[in-house]
Amino acid sequence: LQSAFTNLMTASKETVSEAVSKLKSRLNIESKVRTLTKKEQLVLSLEMQYPEDVGVLAAFFFNYVKLNPGEALYIGANEPHAYLSGECVECMATSDNVVRAGLTPKYRDVQTLCSMLTYKQNYPEILRGVPVQAYVTRYIPPSEEFEVDRCLLPSGESVTMSPVPGPSIFLVMTGEGKIEADSMLDEGKAKEGDVFFVPAHTEVRILASGPGSMQLYRAGVNSRFFS
Image (tube, rainbow, N blue to C red; front, side, top):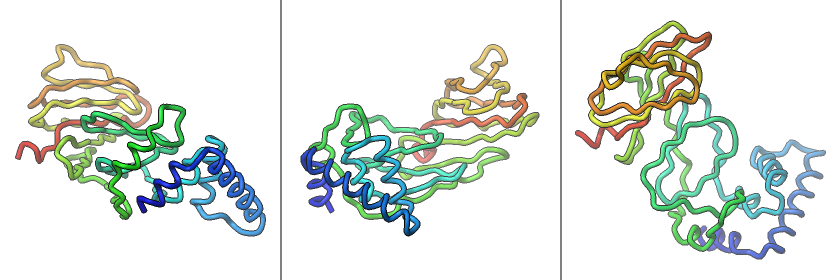
């Protein structure tokens, strides 16, 4: 797998361009006589966004994963991935680098990427979270750096999130309401896009007051780290 992937990623622009062009032509012809697979539909979509990009061909080396609302995915260190569409919250551990090699206008470091990958051949585990209290679901990855809570609060409802032993960052994804914490002198209005820092051992009270549900995310240190 490492040899095949590296040979593809290091191929000349002319070779990649020709291969992508032939692939596009073949799939467009076959789409008239059969239903293309999801992966084939994906590569045609990628080609429209990134013409002649090696990432279009590299997609055949990847698992194609679709997440439903409330589902999460953990990606370990040195595992390649490409975020394609939709809204998501990404929590990342402290890292010294992000290496790119395709489907991007940013700097590409192909040799470094190909040399650092694990080349594990597994389907990623879908995390659906564990309910920790009313309206709150926790996602605990296998690493100790972080964990994420999702709070989906219907309008007019409130929840008190229990204190945790480490600091937290709260992100209001959708909706609006109020947030109260001992570290805040006054009741804080919270709306879509707002971010709040909450110290360790602090109880947080949340009230959804908008017309729709309020969706918040809390990122903090993995609870296993303190046990």
